[in-house]
Length: 291
Image (cartoon, rainbow, N blue to C red; front, side, top):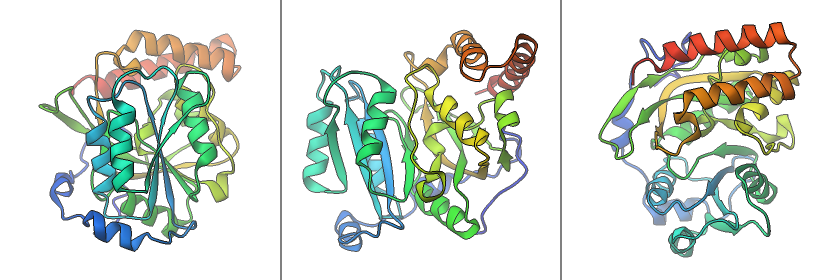
């Protein structure tokens, strides 16, 4: 099937679904391990998964990675000192059977950015992908995105996705992505979902997250300011879980954090920040007005 790279504006309208991929045949664990005994760094995808008391959903997250039709990956599941539930034991159980899965503990300190940065420092792959511990991917996500990047020599890409509720009883509409996102476009709306991002480290160089609310938004802005563009693969390849504790679930708090980024991180003056926040609010209202 040809890569669907339409002119989506980020609201998902008119984007054909790919739900059938949730049921497509995936390689067995034995076959996957045999095919990646001597993984090539050039095609290796390093998946960064921070965990914090994630025992409720981490099984689903890990299994969605094991079910990928693309098998040349490593998954770095990283916990800081704040984790107190059975997440480490669960992850270690998977690691004992599948050496591509690695559980790592941050030596000291707490925080999402700290955990991601520590895992990134241990990554071996040319490509970086991000998957939080309550989200999951559809089986062709890595294959489609790696092919998309290699075919076009892209450095920074994202994909479409759907939201799901806490218990997966409700699956939302497709949230599409623009064909290309620039710095100015991203200031108007964060249309780049972290669980859909893939970076080519050979092109963008070393990356790190800032310990801040919306630390992923800040990283995307930094990359775009450096002249990179985020290319959109407008295919439904991931599931983002809405949980009560999710930072993105509180839209008012999200707007406050976005304002701080405009003013304190990006250095926008007051009129510019007001304009961007207005655009941000209107676009998000349109995007999230229906599930």
